[in-house]
Image 1 (tube, helix red, strand yellow):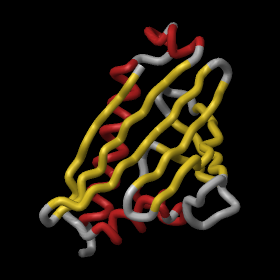
Image 2 (tube, one colour; image 1 turned 60 degrees about the vertical axis):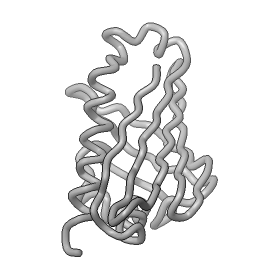
Image 3 (tube, rainbow, N blue to C red; image 1 turned 120 degrees about the vertical axis):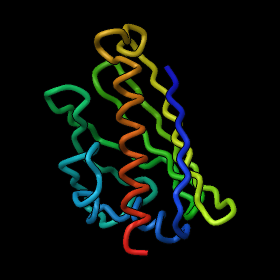
Length: 143
């Protein structure tokens, strides 16, 4: 399964990048990924972030491993959980007076193949859209 979404954020790349990578402020703007715990203040190559997602009424706790991080360009994280592998890429591109953020998430494994009720694409896509809208709002506020 593949979920791809793009959003234009009308803010400088530094603001968008800092909002996204500074884990200490996620609680203030991020309504999708909660209970964030990490040894690092910011996303860092090779580090892990423990967090919870709420695709349903109950939380799913996952460990996100930062696979690749190129400042102001790319963040890739992955997660494994009971027969499911997810890889999420965020691509940052400056265009005109905004930043285009492309979210591309792929799912593999047994749970992915039985997606239907266990991993509904529509629900996962709605979470991605909400995450990007949260990032947009936080990045555009306060200049």
